[in-house]
Image (cartoon, rainbow, N blue to C red; front, top):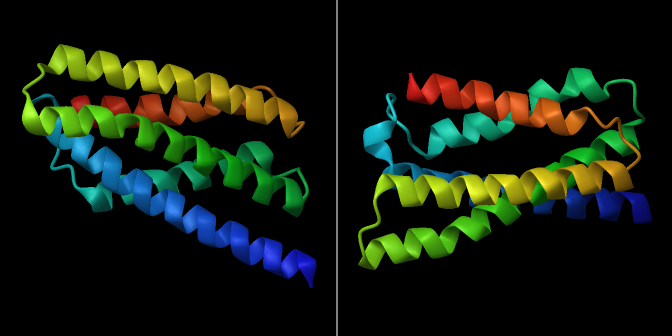
Length: 148
């Protein structure tokens, strides 16, 4: 019984993380739209987040179901943390114009924080160390796609 409540709680939090991440990154993408070569909207970000989950699966498929749930839960929490860290930049840009260099530097500082937080959580979850790098690889491939 406790496990079912815990699972429902985690699924609810994970869905909330996906919505917040999609909305926040969509707003950030609007700030740097002139650098992006595709039509970027919240649906694209939603697909990117869901794609991340699918992309990571081959790297964790040998783990237990509980480890997979814990990993996905933690990965989405890290994504939401990054999205929340972007909010001050988004709000500031609403009132004052910041150029793309400053916006991108801030974004990459947030990504750096997210990477180290992801690594820390992977370690605490006793997951393979390389998962943090596959997480970066996926985002790097998406970055190439939206910039070229």
